[in-house]
Amino acid sequence: MDYFLYKDGELQAEDCAVAQLAQTYGTPLYLYSRATLERHWHAFDNAVANHPHLICYAVKANSNLAVLNVLARLGSGFDIVSGGELARVIEAGGDPKKVVFSGVGKTVSEMEMALELGIYCFNVESAAELEQLNLVALRLGKVAPVSLRVNPDVDAGTHPYISTGLKENKFGIAMEEAEAIFLRAHELAGLEVKGADCHIGSQLTEIQPFLDAMDRMLGLIDRLAEKGVSISHLDVGGGLGVTYDDEVPPQPSDYASALLERLAGRELKLIFEPGRAIAANAGIFVTQVLYLKQNSEKNFALVDGAMNDLIRPSLYSAWQNIIAVNPRQGDTLNYDIVGPVCETGDFLGKDRSLVLESGDLLAVRSSGAYGFTMSSNYNSRPRAAEVMVDGSAHYLVREREKIAQLWQGEQLLP
Ligand SMILES: Cc1ncc(COP(=O)(O)O)c(C=O)c1O
Ligand SMILES: N[C@@H](CCCC[NH3+])C(=O)O
Image 1 (cartoon, rainbow, N blue to C red):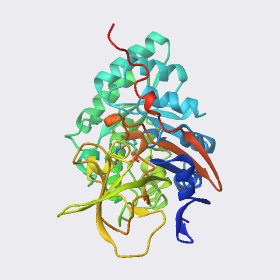
Image 2 (tube, rainbow, N blue to C red):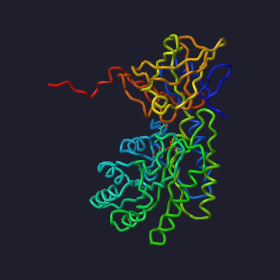
Image 3 (cartoon, helix red, strand yellow):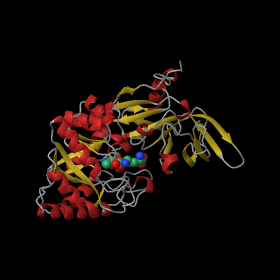
Image 4 (cartoon, rainbow, N blue to C red):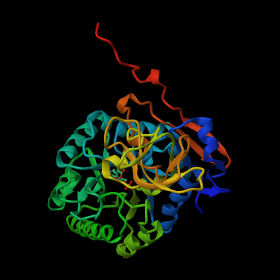
């Protein structure tokens, strides 16, 4: 079941008309579907129901408090990469004991915060970070639970900017060095080795790279066991792709059963860090056509949403489906859907065949992940509003920024 679908010729978000929501809250606007978030989370959780596991939603995909709260109420864990994300998880009612902390550049104060809150595990990404964490833990009289993020050198076959598991990427510890660093972690009094971790990239549409990574990780776990280091969980990261266009990524159930088969009866607890697969298709971005404009080469639809609101098309040449909220009859034209930002790269989509008039509403699909969280105030544009739809109810879960808020906290020179 799709929670964003046309009914009587107009786009719905669950049981609400998108046009009505746009009128109520204004545009540009992010809309999220609670039912879709829940369905996607359950798809992961059910897929591994018979095996010890923890689903740690990757907060970076969408860190709106209401989104986190929906998942926290399901009992989700969270994968964070900063103190800010940890604070949001706590604010949203998430359980710190189900938090894993990833990221290559954790600061001392972030380590302190996470230790004080008693998170589930630190995913340590370098030997230097390991030493630092040990010192911080000893100073606080704590023992930090750690997992080492290993770079399995697997080609995820995804966009180079979002591939993370290759040797040339900054992430993780090289497989050749992993054993020695695990042994070092095992010796340090401020640390307790719990797990091994990998994350090879985002928007993967094939299972094979995940399996290759897992085989390498299981080989490492076996070698460590021989040396007296026992690993109780394997964190397989996130990365499962979604349908933006015509990709057919594996379902969480197929992905999980392939992984479980590889585990071959081991009792290793599995941790998953899905972000996009939970949030992307639980959200749409709604924008209004301000002006139509033609030149000898192109038809442009100038809309009130821009690259500062949704940067994926500009940054990764990502293709996201753009549909009319109330489709019109008539002859289509090929439009570039562009925003008001002063950059040639400011587009939401190119060559989209649509029938448009100014004032029309457009929905950019699959915008629930890496949409609002990657937005900025570039061109001093206020950030979009965010609304959670829940059946026929809808809640403003973040107000549109006001122009006067944009310089709050800044100071003129004396
Ligand atoms: C360590 C880590 N875990 C999880 C994720 C979430 O990835 P995705 O949104 O592709 O599931 C990311 C982002 O790629 C990540 O860097
Ligand atoms: N932000 C990226 C994915 C990066 C994942 C974070 N490691 C995207 O929109 O596709």
